Amino acid sequence: MKYAPEQYARAFLSLMDGHPNEKAKITEGLVRTLAASGDLPRAEEVLTAIETALAKREGRPRISVRSARPLERSAIERIRSRFGADALTTTRVVPDLLGGVQIVVNEETMIDATLKRKLDALFGGAR
Image (cartoon, rainbow, N blue to C red):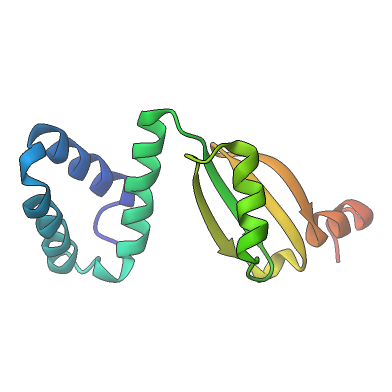
């Protein structure tokens, strides 16, 4: 990646703040810039950085839910309801967790109920 996702996010949001009537042009410019720099395949990371920066700016909680397998929508909604309907919630499947769920709020691990953590605790990290 030519630039870090956070750099793209800062530049994008700065332009949006300075030119609120040019949202479509600024968004098109972001896509063109990602393509020209070879970063288009990582566009999802850039969008996540933009969402995260906006949530942080607005004081909304940012929740990252990691699980070994995809969670049902109802489970995600129950987690989200605990932190407020306006929370920015992202989910990620991480097979290395083996089972369970890990919830990170505002970059701080709040709940780690994963099988990996339990096994690491039981066997001292050596499996």
